[in-house]
Image (cartoon, rainbow, N blue to C red; front, side):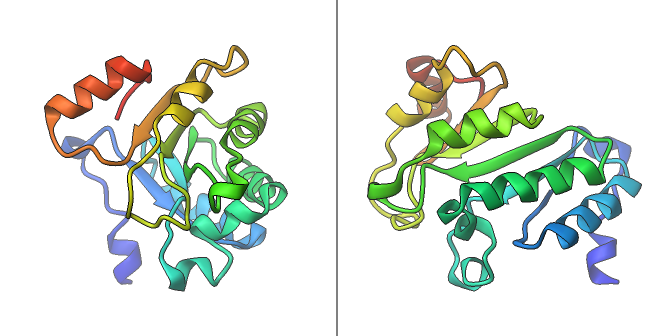
Length: 172
């Protein structure tokens, strides 16, 4: 009941998206169907959460180790909703497996409408500096037409504007 109450959407809150995460295709499709009934403006999939209790369930950033699974989970969500689907993710699992270029292209190819990229790996959690050059590379990829949003180390409006202009992304 508590979770269902979180799905109450009031017109004054719009535009509003509902974010889901998981590691099971059936559960993700069912979640999308449930979210679809309350008609937010979009469904966002969180493939970026680095928290251990989420990752060890094969969800959030845990999916970064298996791009094929990420694609299957995203397809399941797209199948379960008539709403636009967006994704939030990270650069990769660790420095040795930064795969955001492949991830962005494959997500766009199956119909993802926008991508938010946290400019850190899962191994970094929230520590160290984020590396926005990877986000800029994705944005400048001629194959990428969906909006690209950046995330990480933004602690002021001035820095948000500076990074938006410096890296040419669609938003922060």
